[in-house]
Amino acid sequence: MVIYSTGNRKNIQMIIYNAIKNIYFNKIFVNFIHKHVNEWYNNVKLNNER
Image (cartoon, rainbow, N blue to C red; front, side):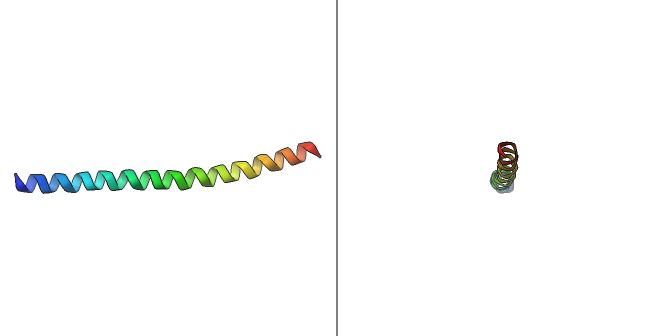
């Protein structure tokens, strides 16, 4: 029972760790993409206004 509970706790920690890692990575990824899309969009807009 003790072994099971420690193993379970480790699993929960890994799940939380992976969730935080995924959220953190997605945030960076989305910001990166968003920045590039914004720059591209602004360039297209500038070219159309010329």
